[in-house]
Amino acid sequence: TAPRCGSRSFSRSCSCPPWAVPAPTARATRNTAARSPRIPRGKEPLPGTLFLRVISRCAYRITRAVSLYVFGSALQSLPRQWVLRGHSHWSYEDLKHWSTDYSDCGGTKQSPINVDTAQATFSPDLRPIQLSGYSLPANKQLKLKNNGHTVVLELPESLALTGGYAQQYRAVQLHLHWGSPLGPGSEHTINGRRFPAEIHVVHYNTKYDSFTEAMVHPDGLAVLGAFLEVGHGENQYYHEILKHLFEIQEVGQETLVPGFNIAGLLPANLKLYFHYNGSLTTPPCYQTVKWTIFNQTMLLSHNQMSMLVSSLRTDDDKLLQSNYRPVQNLHGRRVLASFQTTPLVKHAPGSDDSATAEGHSSSFHAGDVLAVLFGVLFAVTALAFLLYIYKHRSQNTRLDSPTKSKVIYTAASTENTA
Ligand SMILES: [Zn+2]
Image 1 (cartoon, rainbow, N blue to C red):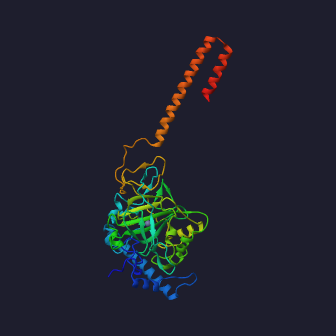
Image 2 (spheres, rainbow, N blue to C red; image 1 turned 90 degrees about the horizontal axis):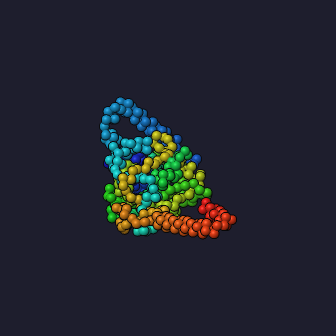
Image 3 (cartoon, rainbow, N blue to C red; image 1 turned 180 degrees about the horizontal axis):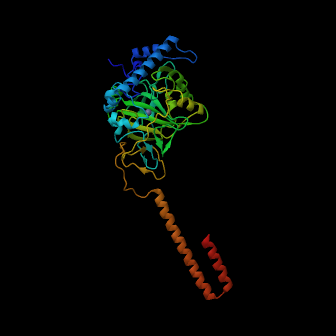
């Protein structure tokens, strides 16, 4: 039988999305605790274990190289799913193949996107996001794993979204996207700006029995996203994750993290956000995600950001870096904002959050009204001034006084050019 998605034997990832998490069972948790490779710094595994690991890795590489050499051309012509069955063998260097292997990746509601704040539609119906059960006691152990694409923290089902969405969503996991020392790596961008990193907290609609079932339905998933930036001082909440990264440097490794307040990983202000309908940002790219991108960013110290971008490794023994997908075409989708992004932001006509038609037949905006008002005032003033000059000049001509005439004329010209 195939190993369970997310189980340790599935370490090279599987046909499920890379961050798919199995429904936790008591047995799985026990096994994890027993086999979890929590390797404190300096305490390396036994030489025998290490030897076996090296041998198996070499064997894998040699087999792969030989089979590629022998069957190389034949493999090229076969659909990749057949060749790589059982492995979600996608990578960020291989973006253009995503849609041939996973048709949804070529769809018209893909994520991430660039959020153009001037184009966002203000929707007063977007209520503040409410988190419940996010504060976890330290005796609640959470699994943290390197799946080769990102670091995933599994979340208990007690965490839920209770406000901001029309339906109830339950948390499954959170993970991060980052860049490299050379560049930022958030997935979404704001007005073309990419942030150093981005956190995604994945939830599924409680009307479905499991995440796997929910992920194929249009209203199945809700993901909360926030940007990470470099600021002064350590972020204590991110420290709870980052301090364990050295234990899971290799793909498939996992460790246990004591519970903490998960809400601390998200902005304090949950009222200001952008909302749109999109997809998973990794294969299979299912277009079933209602996205929330917070306006407020999270601050990490420079050291913490360095730890994030240079701790984990990939299948190919390279550093796991720049694990973000480029922004996708909006294809006419509307991005809603829970707040006024600019004074001229357009109002959403309806209360529907599915971003339907928009009232282009809009009346004047505040800016337009002001411009017209000032224009009229200027015209009236100029006209009055000209009339005044004309009147005085004709009077002076009649009085025939050159001195006075000169004074009035000079004064008028000075004011005119001011
Ligand atoms: Zn993500």
